[in-house]
Length: 322
Image (cartoon, rainbow, N blue to C red):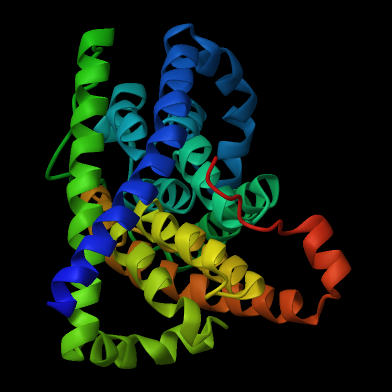
């Protein structure tokens, strides 16, 4: 009976988290889609063409990168081979570009969710984009110096760049929100069940060494783990509730969000870019290693800051539901 009561309370929590996410995702997704259809992204993207040279990439991919930053990975990957023929790209090119996408994509939606947990939106966006640029640049230099992955790319899947109308857009949005609710419900009840039978403790015991290396403490570990495997919408969504309750201290919330920004949705997103021809060692193992080291450095800085500095420039208390 107690477990059934816990499920009932969990359902109320699920609806609360879900409503917060819907309030963020719907207006931001519609606004971003509107800007895309009005041609705003195409107008700005030529400014990013010179940046592509830092990574040894064709300048045309600046449009795909900007689309990924604003719309998401799926918007970007549909453009890659439409902008640059497959025959003109190497495995290294696709791997480096995939690294840029994996670190920073769908920023208006994902970082708005993170902001609800407390971390400053501008700062966390800067960290994700900056981390992606640093990792992609280092990866490009290593691959070029060693002459690794210089063979022509051989994708197993070439996505089509299909233009949809507004009806299709809203149908897709409604479907995504429905799936999100089911996943949130499964996560919340699944975590409660795993905690009850002791399985969660065993899983976190396996992940704890990596989390500790990254500077993430026990209170925030399970939410960082959810973000790592399933994505920011889920890890961040659950973390909003915990931050508001005070069960996860502000600095631990911030550090967990930084880690999720660098390494999240490592199953789905990795499979997608691997299908495009990206190298798994670079986009999975290298990315997680970079995320651990970079987060550890940031964590050391965050824990050394005075409260006034931290709460003025990096974090504000998680917003209470309105």
